[in-house]
Amino acid sequence: MRAARCHTLGGPPVVEEVPEPRGEVPVDVHFAAVNFADVLVIEGTYQVKAEVPFIPGSEFSGTVARDGHGFRVGDRVFGSAFIGAFAERVAVSAASLHRIPAAVPMEGAAAFGVSHATAFNALRLVADVREGERVTVLGAAGAVGLAAVELALLLGAEVIAVASSEEKRAVCAELGAHTVLPYEHLKRALQEAGGADVVVDPVGGPHSEQALRGMRWGGRFVSVGFASGEIPSIPLNLAMLKGVTIHGFDFGGWARHDRERLAAARIELHRLFAEGAVHPRIHAVHPLDEVGAALRVGRGAIGKVLLEVARGV
Image (cartoon, rainbow, N blue to C red):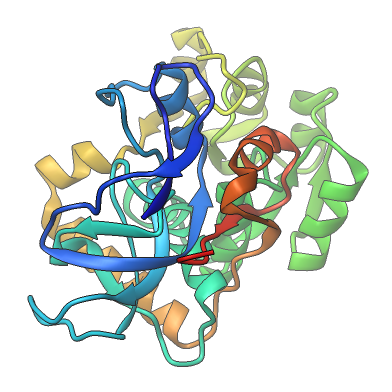
């Protein structure tokens, strides 16, 4: 089968013939999503290292290739794994697979799982957002950011979307954000908008502190990633003086320490997906041979970038 494989950390993935994978449930990949974590794994800067050579890619949709473990050949599924998705076939545990709702296209399923789960868990499990609260989303036009805007609105929040360009802010406004802001003078802009009860931050960097300074007393700040490439250093006296609690969300930690609540949140989120209440936005779709171009889109994407994998082509 064909796959994009990395032979050195930091080196570009090369599309080549590789052996079929082994695992519980083999899935013929139709679409694979590009996540920021995939870029870090390829660069060798992710907190968990992949052993070279490896096939990157952590999120996909496709069809089951062999009966077993509760699945039948042809079942439409989406799922995730640490690596292996940038390939014509991936093999994963049955527990990491979910059936695609009948009305949902393959592309939407590939773009949904990681970003929307990250955003929903940050809002629901960590921040416990309540109706009428004001939620500020940094990096609001990225995949996680757009998911957070959409889901915060569904939870009844007033949403302030912060994004770096007029085009990105326009997309957030079209999605329903009540206020859209640039990063310039963020603290003052947030305060003038009435402050924030919750901040969801997938970006990091210097904007994190400015967003925290613009929060209301007693708010909840949730860090979910560092797309800027910079882990912020926040003076803790700010948290003390403002009564703000600072949280982080990471799938691995929750899976180890509170798997039951994580599973319950997944059921709730997947119900919203099946009902058509959430709509992942796809920025671009590249063929597998253009994996390098897909990875280079980076923070310029408004939504999710996908690889389309056509087996045997």
